[in-house]
Image (cartoon, rainbow, N blue to C red; front, top):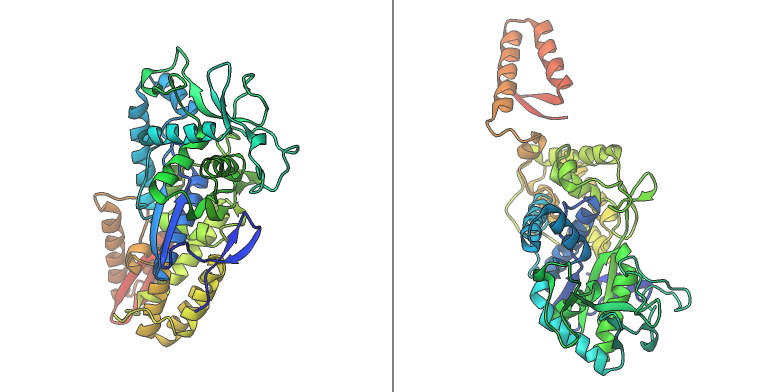
Length: 463
């Protein structure tokens, strides 16, 4: 088997992946700011890096996967005050919703999910190191800022020169800064802010800036230098650029060896985001589409490519996933382990080792499904099921997926279909074929496909 290659945003090329510690991988991914429901862009981050950690584990690596939670932020404070609730009441609720959405999409829980508010002492220690190294200063307004022009190498991740750069979207206009590019490490408390967002420090009461959170949490949980740092493309600048400056400025050595960024989700050729008001929450999407269809839709695109969201693309994903499940419907997979020497498995592995090329890997799954349809081979059915498992796919029974619809807690929908199938069988027995066809067409109009099997058995699935 070939070596794993990863496109490293820092070097702007695919590189052979070599972990710092043989056989072990330490990976950190920037998670959500929890003040609202997660949208489909968040779903892509969760699914993409869940896919990556699943594949790396299946390749034999011992992976420590950390995905943080930002539970202190200007937007969080504003929303909590508007709602008349505490910060923790707001964030606890939306963390629960986030975890529910992730579980629905088949996203495995990370090994650690640190909350920013739990690591304020580590943030203060990091800020102290930066001040000691001449990279942080307290401004007249009480904020502590990072001095960007005093850190050599700033801009190496984004590939921009200092003269080209502008302050990032989360950096407020601040007349206390020495330079417009400087960013806040510690925000001085304001009188009108809730007491629960005020921590004591040697610079006065305040709270951490956004960027310092991830430097402190990743350093505490994974060490001062680790293997992989991931996140959405929108975080490349300024957030990840600032993380590098903070961490390397404090510790005086490399922060992260490989940087991974997933592409934007787009709607009508425009980036989907809350700020533009053109986003769909995961919960809204799951009212219409099966969660596994959404996961499949995300993985059919290469993680670095733009992902074009539309009902048509999700409908197409549903059709494709249905093809894979249908191949397994009448062929029971054997109980043997996955055979990595088998031809399809080798092609699948080659695709995944080439910077997690899921579109090519999924095309191999379709080839396997075609072979299963032809040969009815339990061995190939096992290969199809187990290779799919490395992507978090095809782990339900085919019947469960093919009959999946909106939740039907009391089972009345299934009972109705069974009754119509029975009525159709009676009509066929009485040679009333017009009535039999009418019932079939009625169900088809409702999105139910009937399949007549040998022995007078009729099965159904969603269209």
